[in-house]
Length: 415
Image (cartoon, rainbow, N blue to C red):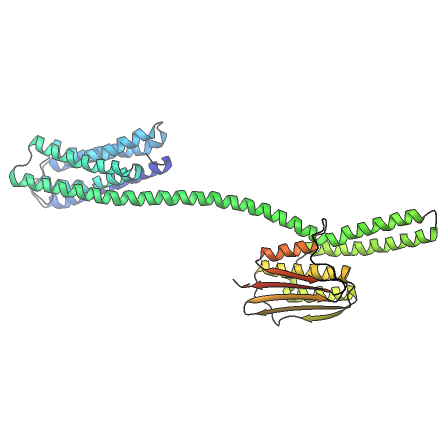
């Protein structure tokens, strides 16, 4: 059995409602048919009374199914009830309706067909394909056994009835296989959707963890050139001042003054970095104005000439690409201010043929770009990480006394 209990209860209640609605419609049709015919007799009302009795019992069991401890047995009983009642009522009670359309035994077969189709759907919903085929065979076999046992038909009418039952059997099997296939597909889709929801929840949790991790890395990249460098410089200067304190107090005082100046400068840089973390210049100014502001501030603090070239008009960049370009520009300019000792700085940003290229070049002291990453320094590795996160490539070219060139290339950035 492959049913899910809440779904099973809902389907049974729906089947009960459809069965009752069909019997009411059938009663109204018979009222219209026999109202114009003389002496309809009590058989019409008796026929419908016997039809409504199992239907009402089905309704009661369907609504009580959720409260029963063993709902599987109730489900089987309901299917047996809706499958057998339409066959047993017209055969066992032999209700002779006055002559009218569908009042003979062959007509009764057509009258009971919609109810038996409901039973077929219930079997296809709750059981596998072989049970559906067994249901179709059992219902039609019961019909034939009753007709032959009660000797209700003879001659040509008997064989015509047998032919009708065989056709109904074939229709039940074909329709049942189709319904069973559709229900199987629906359940597979529901299972796949459930698995996808679980996977999506897992991805969301993983993404949240990665976001926290990336934010921590970003904060370390933003602060490494301020707090770390300031404190390390202070440590060296204070150790030197301590050594000179007894030997040469004037030199010690000079070193302490330098340390105080470095402390003030580091405090300003730290405040600037924290302000950058709190606010989003991209949201307030846009990428191009934010880069222009960064470059102007770096040129003023580093005392070097600035060659700035930016596209005209805002670029249609995704937010993550804008963030990448802005942060890499910020990191590169801070490196130039603090380490390059440069006289000139060039910053060019171009966008052409769906390719974005950022080039930042200085004429400073440079460094050996092929040296391994130094633990505790996250600037250049952080820039590489940012570029890779948006599918870009970052090239860093530098050599001692030959300056530094940083190129960020983003292809198909609009996709």
